[in-house]
Each structure stands twice: as structure tokens, then as C-alpha cells.
Length: 395
Image (cartoon, rainbow, N blue to C red; front, side, top):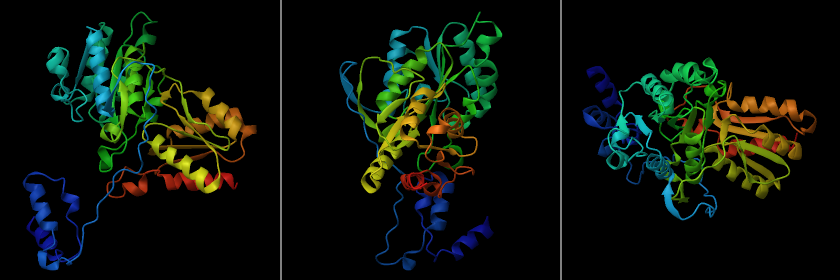
């Protein structure tokens, strides 16, 4: 430790920035801040620390829905809370459980629910993802509407066996005599600007290879509430991935009363004639900007599709669009190799080969663990997608 301190103090006159330690806490964080902070004498008189902008997109809200009754301004985590509140109020068998959910959860998605519905219906679990999902399977089999929270999607892997070998197959092993279809698993998902290795992953493709479950990713507060309520009502185990960067960044007018949005049904957000763009979750908002750039700079008309449900996905909507446009660009944050874009690409190539005007293109994360300070270079931003469109058009 002393040697490390001497090394850092020797470099204190360099241009090291203390901004990286701004989120540190406790004695170690204080020491790290002290070691990395340049001395006052070494600071330039007009130097300013650079601000890191985490968001690589601009959230664009959907039109206010009018078919579901009165609305209220909510961000994404509040819309999730509203969906859970509606479920607990209407279904006496519903229970919510996970790490820290009784206190409101790390993202505040269950705030106030324990006080409103009691500690027997909203309660904490040990830090054991396998146990959380295993308990949820048992509760669902016993007749409860079980809503389990995995604190981060990155930590869902210890529960992989329970999800893939138990939840997904429970109905089939008994010839439909019993099932755990009333189980829903929620998990914060995707990049957040500073999550690094263990708080940024997008593991949807792992579960897309598993018949017997449904996998859903919303793009906005309105979609989050409607799709979550559909997952809870569905008679199959569902995994509901929530884009955590949108928890507070996404704000819309959300219906107060319960409503559902059909699963396995993609939504065409913008109609176009030259290129089909397919994405889900946060990446939809990147692609909105890409479509606008393509129209303004290239005169290219893009059709934007939000897949919404990863498994089972809406092949018909995507293929019909590609038949019309002749070009397909798929983008997601997860690594490109083995990502769900590969499955979409393969299916479209099989179904629409003679309609293609250019090779199907994937713009995704790199085949590396999710980085920290290099996140802006890793994510498939609008510039990468825009360049891909130019190549397809000029093919």
C-alpha cells in the first residue's frame, strides 16, 4: 500500500482527473480521491474538468394514449410501480419478492408497496438469485401470482438452471398437469453510462434459446406498464427486462388504470420504404435519431420496428417490412456474436432472400466484456448505425 501511495503521489502533478472517483464513498474512496487529485499549484488557472455525458440517445415519448382512461406523468420506474400496484390491488394471490424490494428496491420500483399491502406480500429475500427464482417457481405452482425481482440482469446467471431447466419445462414434464405460468421475473437491463462489467449486460439472447418462457423488453413507460401487466397475466413464465438507463430518463403520460399490450407483437413506429430498422429497449431511441438522420442527410426512408418481445418474436411483421424495403439493419447493445440479431438475420435471410437489395447488417456491441470508461466506444450509437445505412444504400 505504501509503495502504491508513493507511486501515485509521484504522478500527482500529471493531468489525472479526480472525476472518476466522484462516486466513491467511505475511507477507501476518500483516499483514492486524495491520491488522484492534483495539487492546487499544478492546476491550470482556466482548466475545467470534462463532463461525461452518459446518455447516447435522446428519449422521444410516444403520443399520449387515450384508449385506457386518465393518464399521469410517470417515468419508467414509476410506471413499473403502477403496474405492480394494480396487480397487488386486483389479485389477492400476488406476491413480490427479491433483494431489497421491501425497502423499495435499488431503483425504487417497489417503493411504498410493502406499507400498502403488507410484509407478507412484498418482502425481501436472501442474496441468492437461484433461491429467488426457485421460490418463485414453487409459489407459482402453488397458485400464487409470483413476481420475482433480480436486482440486476447481470446477476441472473446463478438462476439460469432454475429458469431453463425448471420454470421453462415445468409444464412439459407433467403433460400440463401442473405449471408455473404465473411466474414473472423482472430485472434491470442494459447499459447505464457507468455500469461497467457487472451492471450493463443485456442477456436476452441466452434465454431466447429456451422454449417455454417469454422474454420482453419495453422501450418506454407506457410500454413498460402494459407489457409488464401482460407478462403477469400470461400463462407462461416471463422474463421482463427493464432498460435501467430509462428509469428516470424516460417520462410519459401513463394510464393510471391497468391495461395490457399484446406480447409477441412487434410495433411499427415509423413507416418507410428504403431500409428496415429493428431494435428493442433503449436502442429504439437511438434508431429514431438514425432514421431522422438518414432522411435529412441521405434522403433515405427508414421503417422502424420495435420488436418488444424477444421470445417468441414477431417474424411476420419484420419479414413483411423487409420484403417492402429490401434492406435490414438490426441493432442491440449485447455482443454481436450469438446476439439475437443473428437469429433475426438468419430467419429473414431464409424467408426474404430474393427480396434483399443488400446484405443484412448488424450493429451491436463488441465481443468483449462491457467496458467502463470505454463505454462510449462500445455502444452501437447513432453514428455507427448511420454509417451502416450508407453502406447498405451504396451496396
